[in-house]
Image (cartoon, rainbow, N blue to C red; front, side):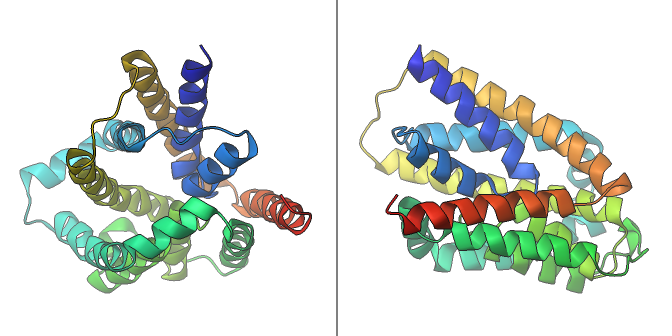
Length: 259
């Protein structure tokens, strides 16, 4: 029962924080350390990514269908251009970032940095460029920011939305492009994990917790995307900035006290 509850909890955390601008990896590292949870294993991590992938597909089925029907169209090319720097950064620094994620020693500072980025971009003048006006230069720069978000407590969605806003893209379309760009990134991460899984010794796992955790990641991810699209369109991300500042400050204080 405890294993099932842990998988449900981690699935919800992964789904919500993957798409809210507060960092999924940072929260998973934090909660596992804070509550003494065991590493769920490579298979479960892969399935959590699969759950968030389902969420993106459900929300953006129309756009995904457009790409599949016209793989040489502009949207497909933008996603390819944006994914290239993400893949280069991820593959080049994979071992380094995995070590940082494992130890969690920098996540306090990274949460503070995420908050500064969110607050800063919300203080800027808003742009009004529409989705159809996104350029390949925009995609390249935003994809580079997505690659930089491989640091555990730097929010991928926060950084890519911030990058889109800084490029003058209208808020709702900035969020749409950020979430669409996450699709090949999540696919790539899942593919790499699957390769590692095939090479690793066979893991023993319970099927029900695995399926339930994945399902909760998908549901929470779907809710988070819908909520974030609404927040970006009508509200502000400064509340998220305050949240990660408080979280980062608490983590640094706890580390200073020997946690």
